[in-house]
Image (tube, rainbow, N blue to C red; front, side):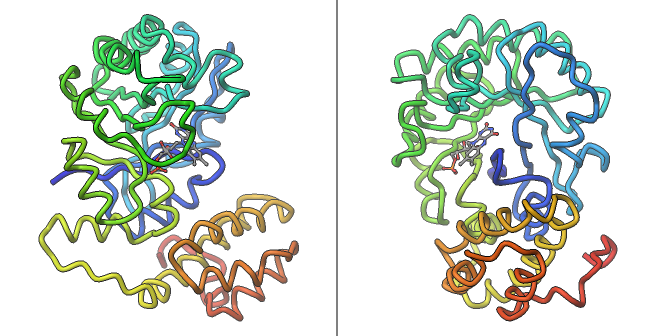
Length: 333
Ligand SMILES: Cc1cc2nc3c(=O)[nH]c(=O)nc-3n(C[C@H](O)[C@H](O)[C@H](O)COP(=O)(O)O)c2cc1C
């Protein structure tokens, strides 16, 4: 059966949302938000901060392995930091060659590296040399900076550098996040790369997944925003792959989601300052609105609220069961 990967999403999916989404299930693997590497050897706490799962055998509480993603442009510096990261026993290391953020790109990192396949090779080869063979090294690329002219050369360079698998977000940097994702390019890349290639981009439904696999020729798919907007998507895709009937019952899903929202909110409140917690909840509800009318109502109810206590009260009014679960005990999950 094809693999389903939960995409890295800096600012949207952190260890708390990874915990909740992988508890719902369906994912074989998750990738952490990028750890930015620029000049210094990062202390272990820098990796642990973005990927607290490192302290739990690099797995979410549901047991899903979490790979740590690094972002940078200097081969030696990335290699040194990868070696440092290995000490924390990550499930794998992924290299980011797709980030379109201007702050990252100004320093030549992320998607800008797709202009220079030789540099991609130097980076991957240096990291590969610094990391024991038993640690899986993967890369995630877009199709190019402005166009797809170098897409195949980039993929070849990453493959030659020594990755074990390649994730292709099937858009250029210039495409940003605009649909469509060009899944047919994943198929072209599969032709020139001996390693498994994972398709990524614009999978929001079971039907999207089916079409993505058909067009890309890949069985393995990474899901980003669709996973956040529909926590049951991966489970439904699995059911479909297993030949089971796939019904979408949003009301039933919402009832299952309510305790998970409670868990999310309580973990967020425990992790971030009271000033930042409301924004985190609103961000997730903002995604859930796409699929759940109840999330829309809840989003509207909390939108203008800033205090943790008043948001907790609004959640409870909307059937999110905060009290029985607090304080959250891992054994009760
Ligand atoms: C808010 C946000 C943050 C992201 N952060 C990262 C990141 O840290 N590393 C990375 O490789 N890709 C990042 N991405 C890209 C996603 O991993 C994924 O490639 C992209 O969203 C396309 O997949 P989708 O259409 O399923 O969302 C981010 C995307 C979004 C929307």
